[in-house]
Structure formats: C-alpha cells, structure tokens
Length: 167
Image 1: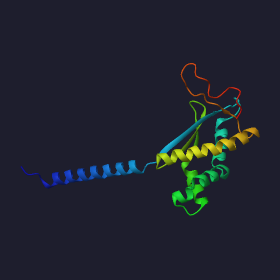
Image 2: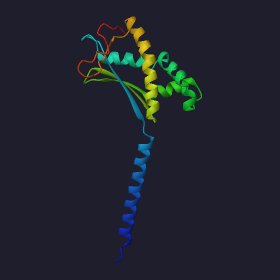
Image 3: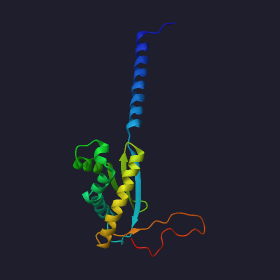
Image 4: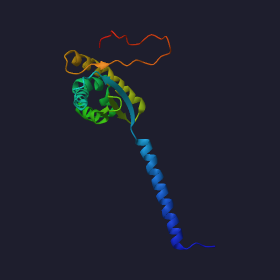
C-alpha cells in the first residue's frame, strides 16, 4: 500500500508544525520571567481613592531613593552586565509592578526576573529599603500607615506584632 504525494505532504506539514510549536513552547517556558510577590494593606479612610494611593506608592517605589540603594547593595550593574546605573534603574523599573488587589484592598508589589532566586533577593532588598523610606513618609503624613499583618500560628502562640507597636 503506497500513499499518494498529497497525503505525504500533509503529514510532513503537520509534523513540521508540531515540532515548531513544541520548540516555541519550550523556548517560552525556559525564558519566561519568574516572580516575587509582596503584599500589604493600608489604613485608609473611606473618602480616599485607592487608585491615587497606588499611584503614589508606585511613584515612591520607582524612585531613585528606593532603587539606587538596592542596585548598589546587590551590585546589579555588574551582575546584569550593564553599562551604567541609569540603565539598571530603567531595567529595574520595567520589571517592578505595583498594582491594587481589589478583592482584599491590598497593594501588590511584583518583581519579575528570569531567575527565581534573584527575583526574591531583589524584592527582599526593595522591601527593606522601601520599608525605611515608607516609614519616614508615613511620619511626615505623606503616605497612609501600613496595617501590620498577623501571622497565623497555633493556639496559644504569642502575637508576633503587638497591637501597640508603631511603624
């Protein structure tokens, strides 16, 4: 039993498309960004618009006041193989996402990187630097205070954040 040329051509095209699609999906999986996530809630009066607050938080997070110390402490210019700190700043801003979580009225900070460990390392450093900057801005009444999150623990465990603690 022999197959006709049109049938063989269709089979060859289907195989080539399958191989090309598989290779594309594999490449997309290997080069995709991994994310690190930070979430926090704010004490907001009802009359304040959450979108405006998120815009202020994003502006503060993308500021040189926050990102330059992160770039310097992690030596990201050299690790990323960039020419200048300005180039690293722009790259970091493109990978840092600040948005509102409407379901829980929280702010989400997402940092994307090809390596999961580096994404977590960078976001941890951003959190450390931003915490200090944000605390100072809260003292000056430029930003609303953060609501401390209580970690879930077993019964009878002490509260990790005392209610009388101040930022």
